[in-house]
Image 1 (spheres, rainbow, N blue to C red):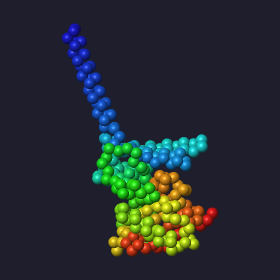
Image 2 (image 1 turned 180 degrees about the vertical axis):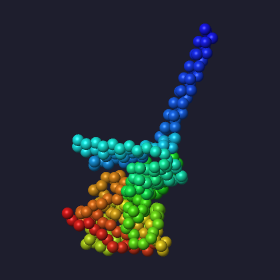
Image 3 (image 1 turned 90 degrees about the vertical axis):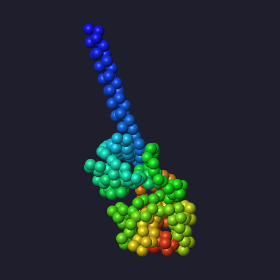
Length: 257
């Protein structure tokens, strides 16, 4: 009888150990290796992406207003290839796309039905960020996609700006303001600059720049999406620069309300 009890006790101990070991493995595989988010300060909305060690992801978007709240959740599998996140099986269903890039402390979705950027909050992934670009607080950068940003007149390809390019952008914008004093009455230091850069067929660097008064938008908010404003005068203007030629094209300035 004692022998049977001993066998049962040993069996239960082994089973208990195996269960705990399995839970530890499952817990470890569900460890977050990346969290990225966007908090919409004006509306209270919240967007969050979590990547887990077991190659699964969870995406949550919460929309709130007075007397209303809607929460959507999506999950699936992913694969990381260098600086690119590939969403497997059904893709990233919220956007109907399957690809995002890790760049300059953001995740930027590349081929969905609309643009989306999320800021990295925590990650254990080794990401090659450009500190030269991260330290420029007046700039925001967006990857060219003709489905979102069809601002260029010919076949072009996306280009990643460098520190020297930012200096040229400021140089050409200052020239633009100086040569149009009646239309542009503010100093360049008063503007945030949202940039989309490409190389054209002549291998010249062109940059679409949307300038907005830096007191209007939150210092972080303008980095998530291209602002669309329909009045405000010269507090908002758009221009395409040719950095290779150090020239600028037509200036589009907002009307006054």
